[in-house]
Length: 517
View (cartoon, rainbow, N blue to C red):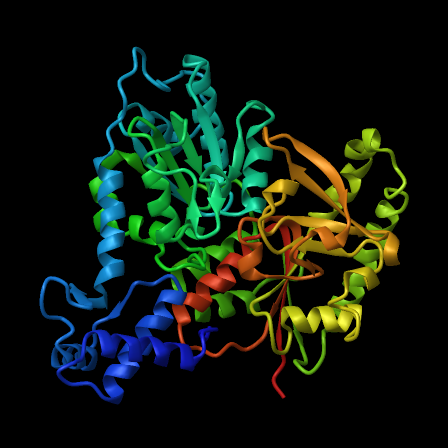
């Protein structure tokens, strides 16, 4: 996957660094190294493998010299000192946290537990550690482990202040839905909402910390260095942390993949028994689970071989189509889906507010049954390509022209409306009578269905398809992935991109790749 940051941006960054710290020797080689490091930041990476060429260029520049040098060599990797030291500071802060004293164990063992040995170990780690790292692929029981941990903690300590969090609104909503059947009073928000994001900063900090005793953060692979640093700044010393994620998924949009650093074997070893990996898969069975494992462990070539050998009865279908147009199966799939959504949306515009929560439930359930995913926003088989092709080139950016039943997505955080970036909704009505229906979160964490005029949303886009980045934290019964050829500048990143896409599927996967010629 190539960087979306322009070469001009990387060049501007390099020029600024040269002015701030003139190199002893520079030229094109140093500019290339600088550009590679800037692009790595976009992919969540703070450093690069240290090749002999990069080592020679860095040494000649003088940017490795001194305690405040621009670059830092760590083992066989090289990166920006500022970012690497900030990441290590986060790791050390987590390791230094101490569990608060309680008159009784927080969770303790229960002989009737339905958890497997690894899940039980993750729960019991909370009695000894202030920070627990819970990692595992999709369907390995991470959520059920968290639910059991929270159940025991809340029963043994009813006054314990517990919070649930995730990096995105969708992920937070999914976590809350999973936990609430047994623990319906626990607040679940995005990290930005917990920290009370305001402009470029946060209203929660060391002088005004969060009022929590235990915080669970899901989808840790999406948390960047800046956000994690802000959280630790606002976290009371006595607050325990449960960090949950899958290291094989995409790094965060922002710089610094905190979860990937925490999953490094040398770091995990320092956490000891508080770092637990779940391996047994309870969901995504069959070909879907096997393919995800192959991709994660063996890479793309083994994945392709495995894909070609699948029987026709598998829950994964592979289709090749011309890159010059949207595949007919995508067009047909949208027609069928739109019929279902528009039928369920019909009449909701006129329903009284008192009936709306129940009346909209079938529509919102149908909305989340399917996902169409693209790896990029522009180009063939991109997000824009899908929306232009299915909504019309002239109307795909005009909400009032979208037909009833079109899925929509909120493009920014609007806490005053109960909306978070990435929340999905549905278009109701037409023309000036148009509204968008969302399930929002009230200030006290309750879910409520609301109808809003499109003009009230600062950013609103159609969501017939989502980018894979946007879909991280989401799941659906059926997932279709459009996978055009990508410019291979970071094969490892592209593997994680595809892995993230296919593991959004709970039941079945349709993978569409470009046909040659």
